[in-house]
Image 1 (cartoon, rainbow, N blue to C red):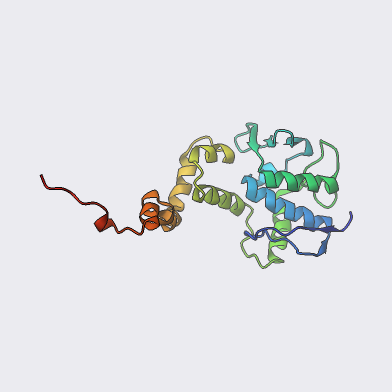
Image 2: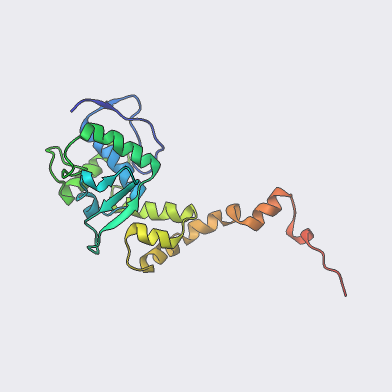
Length: 206
């Protein structure tokens, strides 16, 4: 495989590019994997079963054939992830039936193998939290904190009911409260007009 140069991106968990540094295909693949996990929230078992043919660039979606509930699922791909995957496949190459993220021998990743690979990748960047499931957790948190609705989140995560998604909302309750005043429409009105709540209204006596 040729030496590659990864482009800089925002640091999030282990989403840290190597600036102006040549890297191996393995390191590049790991970087793409981190982007994919953070952008989709897919489970480990789903990711290792992805094949090149499952990526539909024309429609901007990925077809998940191996899911926890054993039902095929189609989810959208973000514009940034589409660009990353398109470039990745220029180096990955392979046939439609080949696994999208393969091991160093071009074969399917074992679950433990991928866990170990990502653990080493994260540790090399001083990232101590290495659980692949943490990306799924982070995807859900960022979605909720950005104002995404729980019904779409349920579909994206592949949950059969809203129960698990509601647990996410409960877990992130403190985080939501921290940002509540900042995004709250009423607070923004008062802030923009430099008003104080006690002087904003005056009632007329009958």
